[in-house]
Image 1 (cartoon, rainbow, N blue to C red):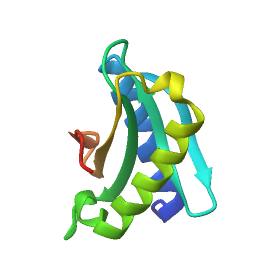
Image 2 (tube, rainbow, N blue to C red):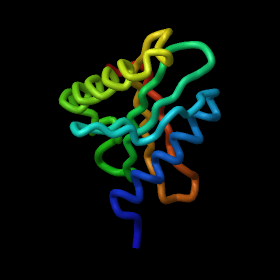
Image 3 (cartoon, rainbow, N blue to C red):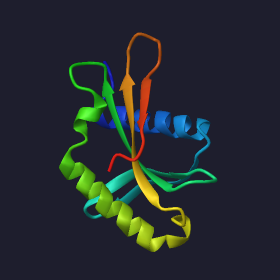
Image 4 (cartoon, rainbow, N blue to C red):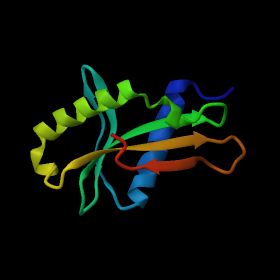
Length: 121
């Protein structure tokens, strides 16, 4: 039967959270919502900037998850990140950045392919 778009997106976010935790990040917030958009994950390492993470998840196929991050989407992400940073300035002492975690779900039993792009915008 397969997963619907929302289900695959939720699965991708769970995969990304576990991946980031494995790289030493603490998850501060998930699905931070503003009227004009949402940030999937907000994370931080002990040292370094606050990281806003956009997660893109797709099945293996013609397009890659990275193909879905447009200039418009990046502008919206920057606006949301700025709003969060202004509300929580104590978390952004070392600045902030936007990362992309691209998750490609493969149906061959091997598990997902995860690519982490740092500071995309």
